[in-house]
Length: 92
Image (cartoon, rainbow, N blue to C red; front, top):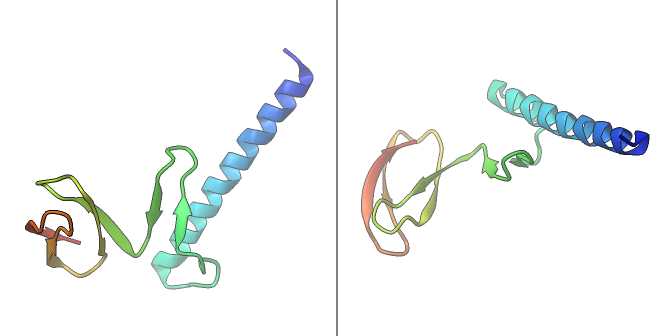
């Protein structure tokens, strides 16, 4: 293998590990109530390609499979789909 390729691969992996550790660190600070580091609420996970938000939970409508974003920590709530107007109850 080429030494240049190995250096690029090592640098890429180091950057991915750094991003993941920053995400985990910011989530831990948000859970404890310290909001100094986590001014930006939305974080992207580069490994799975999914974005998540710590203030909201994503559900899918059982009828039409539309993704619906609901606030976290509200207990049992009635969610109504904007696409098909189907209503269902979920715990957040």
